[in-house]
Length: 73
Image (cartoon, rainbow, N blue to C red):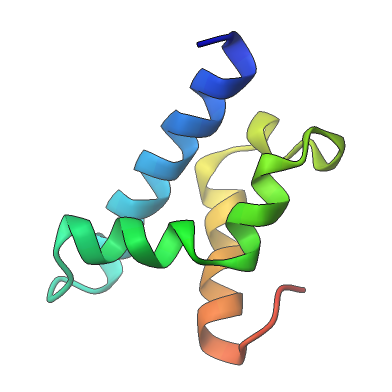
């Protein structure tokens, strides 16, 4: 695993943990599934977006908005 892949993996883990913190009824499996099936995750995978370099809180704001509104903004 290279450095970018590790950073993306860590971001997914952190996003799932933050999602559980906001939604305590979610299991880790549900939180990971939510993250991995999101448009935010697809953007995170693209190196050109640079999202993997950002803070987890910043990226979580995109995921949270996506889950609330149905789109990433």
